[in-house]
Picture: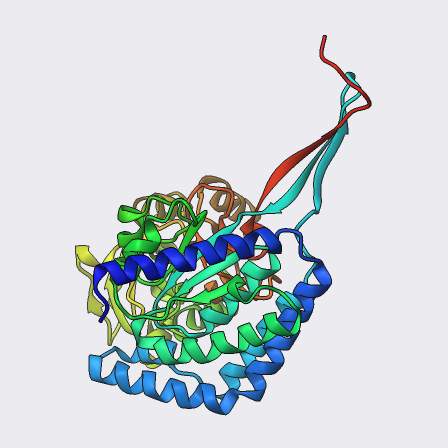
Length: 419
């Protein structure tokens, strides 16, 4: 454990090096960034045995800490998941480079020609918990958008993150880009997080990725702007005009595919007119799938009564709250009260109901007849994501490379003067 003076000096050094790297990355060619990501992907696959060995140390640490099965699942890496990391790096590499893209251009009567073009944010601090794949996703997306990044992984994923980070640095070296473009905080000391949140001279944006405790801390303590989502309190409203087969397929997938991710469904709202038909079938199917259903207004064998604490709850486990509502307006009212503005879904064949749901709610992602587990940057064609932003800043929903840019105005005249 380092003392506070050491941590301050360590983080200041990381910040200075990141800022210097960001200045160079801002004009790095698309080809060099592409080459760095492809080389990093190759390095991850070539070093997969070492990454899995490092992950084994983290899994032992997690077991000793008593992490839940859902958190252990998030932490675990096997060859298939490492293949997913490789695929994500390659997908980000193949995307169009956002830096320098012209967003709009126009001419003024004064003779000025004005362009609004994408430009990197600068230095991004990413603070995340147990999922070691975030090391690759965040590093790749920040690099693609021309940003330097300081990664601070969770204590649980310390060894896995270090092994993956080493592969990203190999990629930077291969492309002759500054190694300081992607840095990993080399300590588990929590004081490093506090330092990162207040480094306004060096860090332009903080992105926290983790549970409510982490994100709440960042939002309270940060002096740097934050792209954040606090929780994934995800609702599905099953309308009376839902297709039963679609509803069963979507609801089961949204809850059970992976219960520990932020896109997992946590609350099922059912139109009162289908309480004894499709509604009951849905609850029975969930119970049969091993889900604990906490229900209000529905009585189905195997369910338990819901309490007031079950609304607005992110379980990240095989638990779901279920409730009858009068209609789409009742669903909207419930979601407005309890949603975390992450992802909410309607299942209906009625276009008017779907249109009202989309119009009246302002979650970052709204879906119709599709599993909420698609709330993911990779599934949106972004290659990967650095997180799901639920705030009102320019980055909302999955934050990919394009969302990690700002813009500047390029104004050209011909000896133009203002009268």
